[in-house]
Amino acid sequence: MKRLACYMLVGFVLMLVQTAILSRVLPGTMKPELLLVLVVYIGLSEDYFSGGALCWFLGCLEDVFAGGDLGLYGIAFLLVFLAIRAAASRFNTESSMLLLVLVFFATLVKGALLVLLLLFFSDSGSQWSLIVEVLVPQAVLNTLAAIVLIRGALAVQRRSASGRTIPGLQHLDNRYGS
Image 1: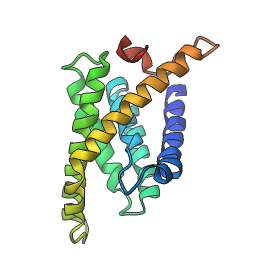
Image 2: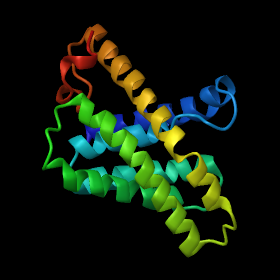
Image 3: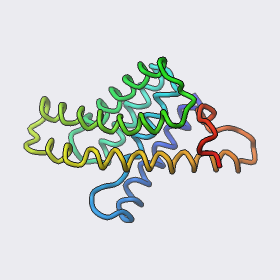
């Protein structure tokens, strides 16, 4: 339960950074989707029930800030989490390179899910073409953001005086620790 509360707090902080800081610093509409990086991380380290509920909650949080159709990101984040969780048993989840690759492909999958959900359940007009147009650059940007987040989380963990580890961070290898 403490881990889930920590994940929710990190999700709130990442959402505030994404909407309040990065939208002012980065030009245009392209900014990294920090909650998607967290969803991938949760998919590698949590079980189906608690991780699924948490990812759905994080998606609903993104829905609130996105201002679009409510439930759209909640469903997309939940489906991305379930796909990662199903595949996690087949991979070495202790590799940070896997996290980066999954962030790239999760961005593509989330984009495809958003397009499908908008086509099926919304009168979206040409919104789907806007999503498809920026999908690959968004995936690259999210992967770069994941590198920064891994380095930052490891730096916070090393400087922590209490010796406690960040939940799930022990799964990452030393590639980004220096």
